[in-house]
Length: 297
Image 1 (tube, rainbow, N blue to C red):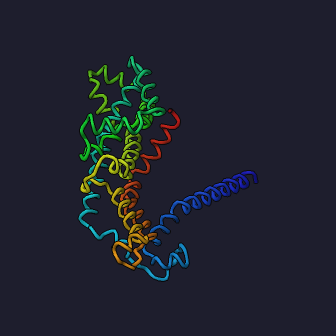
Image 2: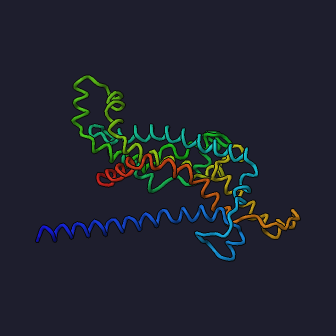
C-alpha cells in the first residue's frame, strides 16, 4: 500500500511539473507566433479588431515595404553576420584566454586582475571617453572595426569563463606539466575541449550582443553600407512613421497609409529569425554552462 501511495505521489508530482513546463513553454512560444501573425495582418484589421491569432486576411505588405531596397538590406545582413562571426571568434579567444589565466591559483596576480575586471563591471569610462578613444585615438570612425571593437572582451563573460574553468581539476594540469606539456599545449589540448559548455554559453552571449546591436552603427558610422541590420530596420521604421505623419504626407503628396504596426512585427521576425534558428543547436551546452558558472561563481 505504501509503495502504491508513493508511486501515485511521484506520478502526480511529475504531472504537475510537466503542466508547469508546458505553460512556461506556451508563455515563451505564443508571443513569437503572435508576432509572426501580426506581421502578415492588414493595418486596418489591426486597428479594428486588434491583435488576433486568426486574421481575416493575410498580406505581405509590411515585408514588401521593408524589401523596397533589397541590396541595402542584404548589405546590412552581411555586415551584421560578419561582425557577429568575427566578433564572436575573437571575443571567445580573448575571453577564454583571460578567464584561464585568472582561474589559475598559481598565477601571482590572479586576485589583482580578477578585482580589476570585476571593477570595470561596476564602473566604466562612459560614452564620451569611449567615443573619443574609438574616433580620435584609434581612428575607427566609419570603419568595420568600430562595430567590432566595443564588445570584444566583456568583463561579465570573463568572470563567467573563469568560474567554469575553476571547476576543472588542477591535477590534470599538473599531470600534463609532468609529461612535458607547455602552457599553450595544455590550454589548447586539455582546457578547451573540457570547456565546450562554457565556450558555447559565452559564445552565444557575445553573438547575441553583436547581432542585436544598433547603437554602435548609430554612434560610429555615417556610411549606409556599414549600417547593421538592427540600425537599418530602425531607420526604415522611422521613415515609415514620418511618411504616415501629416508633415510626411504634405511633403510627398501621398495619401496611402503605409503598414506601421505590422512592419514593426515583420522587423522583429527578420531580426530574430537567424538567432532563433541557431540557438537550439547550442541549447544543451548553454544550459550546462550557465548552471556550472552560477554554482561555482
